[in-house]
Image (cartoon, rainbow, N blue to C red; front, side, top):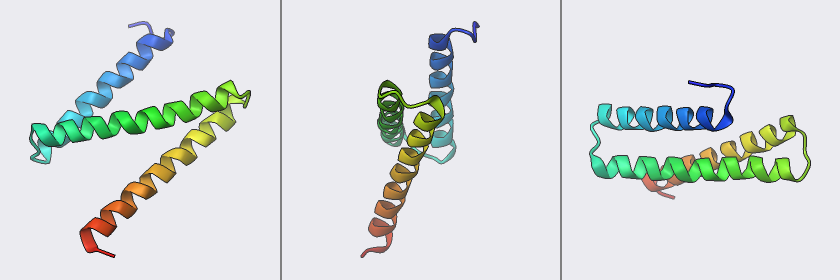
Length: 92
């Protein structure tokens, strides 16, 4: 596997993420519906994070600033998911 090629590395990471997601869902006792939800959620979050990095990089920000913006977006997405979970689990 050529790790210098960015496309090969991206495909490798995507395969590792998909296999890990399937393994976690299977170990947690989920079925195909839960696996579909997990994969769809993962794809959605990945699009938002990679998109925020891409937009930041295209605007001329340095790599470190683009990574910081993507990290902040990941934190915001996580906090929104946690808030939704708490509100639906314990009520408002």
